[in-house]
Amino acid sequence: MRHDSSPERSRGKATAPERSGARVGGPPEGVPSGSELRRGLNSPNPSVARRAALDLGSQRAKGARRDLEQALGRSDAGLRLAAASALGSLGAPESRRALEVALDDPDWRVRAQVAYSLSRIHDRRSLPRLVARLRDDPSALVRNASAIALGRIGDPRAIPALAEALEDESDRVRREAVVALERARDPRAAAQARRFLRDPARRVRIVAAMVLGLRRDRRAVPELLAFLRRADQWERPGILIALGRIGSRRSIPAIARSAEDPVRWVRVSALHALAQLGGPEARRVARAKLPDSAWAVRGAAALALGRVGQPSDAERLVPLLRDPSGWVRRAAIYALGQLPAAEGGTEILHAMEDEDPEVRLAAIWAVGRLRIPLGGPRLVELLTNARPVGASSRTPIATGDGAVRLVSDAESRRFDALVEAVAAFAPDDPRASRALRRARARLSRTELDREARLPTPLGSGTDGRTLREVFEGRRRKL
Image 1 (cartoon, helix red, strand yellow):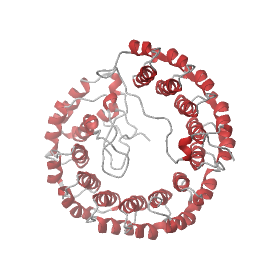
Image 2 (cartoon, helix red, strand yellow):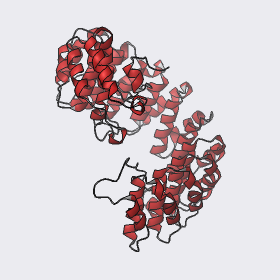
Image 3 (cartoon, rainbow, N blue to C red):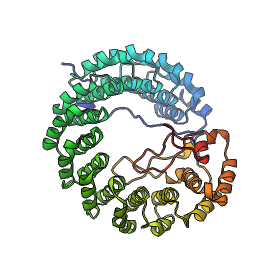
């Protein structure tokens, strides 16, 4: 059995080197310029040199690449760690060789960060060195980082080493090996994942269920249902989402029972799964959970009813537009937008002035989708005064539905949403057509050809169209 040399691993702490993304654009106020930071790399004060390296990475100062590569050979392990992180933020293919040499660093923290940084460069030539670290490194966190990197690179030649890592003593490594095999599209991944539904470590069991859902492995349904019966509250949500993705109707009774689970996030996951499965039972459960005491469940029930409901269900959703939770109001608007009915139009128009920016964004989407007559002039007015927000200003997505959503990005998506909504009125409304032409004239070619950031119910915020295609009213790419 390999000994894990990292003391943090033995105490059970998750102390992998940071994987944070870099800021885009120039240095923020108070941060020195790139040239000053490059001089700071040579400071005799270790703290100053480390900070300089990290700031160069956050600024994506490509002119500092060689200085950072040289810092990988310095005596201070903290500086080597910071330099490796910064090179990962730069993502320059030219740094591959310097990082590969640093995979032999005596400090396990540096080796782990180097592996993460190589994963961001995505160069298949790094595969032999990463495979060697996955197989032989004494630190579980380095092996874990190497598995992550191999998964992101996605070279099928890594499959044998990843298959060996399924037997690693560290549950972290086993988990990442399962994920990496899925990313490599190894046809054996589903069968291997089924085996790990009974792994001793919870994190491995959850990832195994996730992989089976991604593969839509119908043969795994009996094992997933058995797993659901014995699972704890942390495992049940992942199992339910996997069953929903697989889409086997034999799982509907178990998922419907889970909608009554005492843990609200389990109920939320059950509703999301039923929305994917559809049918009368899904509709019945969604209706029943609209008055749930938990705001997250009410919101999930509304979204589910938007997918599986009937136009007559709109009258059940209208009261939720006055819910104290912004997430529930937002979900109800998205649901009403998918259930064309006479009810709710006036309330959706009022929601365009809601205090919650996510609710306002949903209302813009729904007014355009439903083509609510009185909403056209207001949309034109809003588009006339709106300006696109650059990608560098985007922030993580909004709080509310149980996903990792830290800060609302509604304002950065508002211009795109208005373009889409006004375009829905343009064929029959000359004012809408003029507003679109004026808005388009304010954009550069680069802005027009970027992927549009559009509000979509339970979606990623994009549907494959460029902003140019949204202006032109083109349909979604197939």
